[in-house]
Length: 295
Ligand code: FAD
Image (cartoon, rainbow, N blue to C red; front, side, top):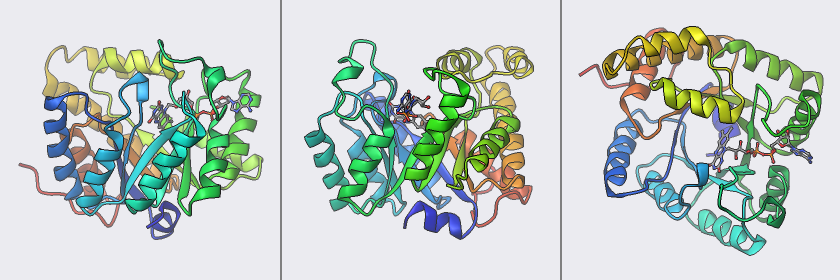
């Protein structure tokens, strides 16, 4: 089913995973996928070469998700690809029964080929290429706080508006303050854009990791949240409680504000995602998903 069709039925719930880098990662991912597939989410997405990681296993993870009976959405990036390589991957996904794809520029690998060698300079060019070849619903990335490489906030919003008009839906970079999402949606509306924008929620479990990712993405990591996490020290259970509490509150606010769904960044762990979904279902913020009882 396409994501716009799913959205038409009510707020969606989805999870993002990344392809594993080694055998341990593969075992953990397999377990996580099974546990989260049991919730019957609207879809699960799989990153592609994010942060310069390997690309190979993305298609295999997508196939594994499809076998679990869940809609899988591969991410696809412009970075360092020929048109023929992209066409071959898109064809593989079509044969696998994929119906949704997230078209991205991609993180530029530190030691990778130059940006100028891209066959597709911007994500919007990839959207057009995939659109010509498939009936996939095509999603794009949105950066509510602005993209770090943007010339200016105004130019960034105009580029976003153009890209969202060409796409069927968008998924956002993570952020910690509902106001960033609301401002972004208002800016898109001013430009006549009504493409559904699914907010991405990151449970902030690790202060250092979140600070690093936030600095790279241009995301504000509120000092109070950081202090709460740092006060937990090495106590992982305490940090998870702070993280799932922050993510639950943000999810409640977003769904109450009319977001078309939520996408949880799992980092391939099941526990925080399960807790957040359970919290949202118990708070009547999210309907239509059943979560196993607390163990
Ligand atoms: P684009 O839309 O191409 O552009 C990014 C910015 O460039 C725009 O916001 C705008 O400011 C500027 N711009 C756009 N068009 C123009 C133009 N014509 N002229 C001048 N400036 C322009 N990375 C990965 O490598 N793998 C992944 O799987 C992955 N998954 C992601 C999932 C989500 C939900 C998000 C939000 C990001 C993901 N990323 C991933 C990271 C993403 O690839 C990077 O943030 C990348 O730097 C920007 O990608 P984009 O698709 O938004 O780029």
